[in-house]
Structures are given as structure tokens and as C-alpha cells.
Image 1 (cartoon, helix red, strand yellow):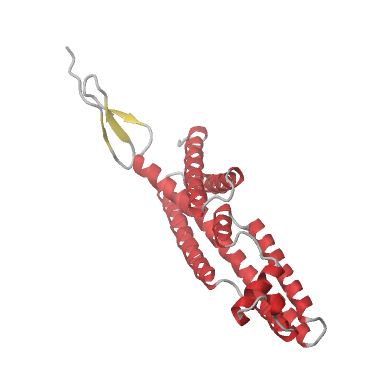
Image 2 (image 1 turned 90 degrees about the vertical axis):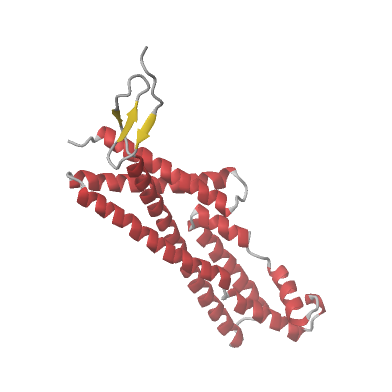
Length: 261
């Protein structure tokens, strides 16, 4: 009777050797766990680096635009070209409009985080009540005309200010994005340098990282469409899985259609 050997695997950087269950002889199995893991890490790092860097730049543009608009409106109020009320209306409308335009270009992951902090821009009437209570501990309608003008001026000035906690997070996003991009590029350069066919490997790196980016963006956007106001970690996890799977699929497809010589 033939001996039965439990199936086992030996992991290496080039191939995986498996012991069949009939006679103990080994045969190579296509693929490499270490190589696959590195490929997935590289693709995920690239996808998230692009999202982080893009979102950080959009936030910086948003900060600059709302501050410039606020300063211009405040200057017009001081010159008495418009009233404080008109200035507050304009400043709030412009800030909300810029916010909407920025969010339309933000990644699904960044958008989920932004909506967790603020679902949408506030109405002027809501801001008036909040500022009146904060400044005078009184409802807005109970304030004098001079006090209401002070509230309007504060709304104009606050339209040019951004959430400091979010600003700190965005700085971390920017640094993280750069670090991930450096890691991804370093792995790609190493892979090309170590490959015998450098032109083929360069094409492979470009195709897999590009596919991973599209997969991450698509998966995150898909969750945002299916789920109403998903949590940031849900979108992030979906983008992570989507990027990993599409990158791995692209890597496998590239080897199949463009095999090494």
C-alpha cells in the first residue's frame, strides 16, 4: 500500500514547492507567496499615496481660496461697498460652493472622512444663531443691530478659517502619501534593476500599479454609491482590498500574456 504523506509547503522567494499526498515527491507550484505579498504591498502603497497626496493638495487649495475670498469680502465691507449682512451671505455661499467643488475632486476615502466631520455646509441662519450664542449668549433676533453686524463680521472672518484639527490630519496625509510613494517607487526600481528583461519588468510595474490605483478608486467609489454615508474606515478598507486584488490580477494577467523569455 502506498504511504500517505500530509500535504505541506516550503516557501521561498522564487517558487513554492508542495509535497503531494501519494509518494512524497515534490513539484513546483506557480507563484511566490513572498513575491505576491510584496506586489500587493507595492500596489496598495502606490494607490494610497496618490489619494493622500491629491487630497492634501486639494485641501491646501481649499484653504487658500476661502481665505482669499474672506479677506476680499471683509475689505469691501470696511470700504462700505456692501453691508455686513451682504458680506456674510456672500462669504458663506462662496465657502460652501468651494467646499462642494473640492469634495467633487476628493477621493472616496477623503470624502468619507470629510463628511464624518461635516456632512454639508451650514445655512447662514444656523451660523447666525451659533455665533450669537457664542458671542453674546443670546438668540440672534434678540441682538441689537450693532451686535448683529458683529456677528455678520465674525461669519465673514470665520469663512476664511479652516478646522485646525483637519489641517493637522491633512499634513499627516501629505507626509504619509509621500512616504508611501517613495516606498512604491523604490520597490519598482528594485524590481526593474533585478530583472533580466528590464523593459518587460518596467512595463509590468506600470501596468500593475496603474491597475491597482484604478481598482482602489473604483472600489472606494462603489462603496460610497451603494452605502449611504459610509464610515471612512469602510471606504478605506474597500479601496485597500480593491487595489490589492486588481493589482494582483493585473500582475498575473501580464505574466500570462507577456511571459518571460
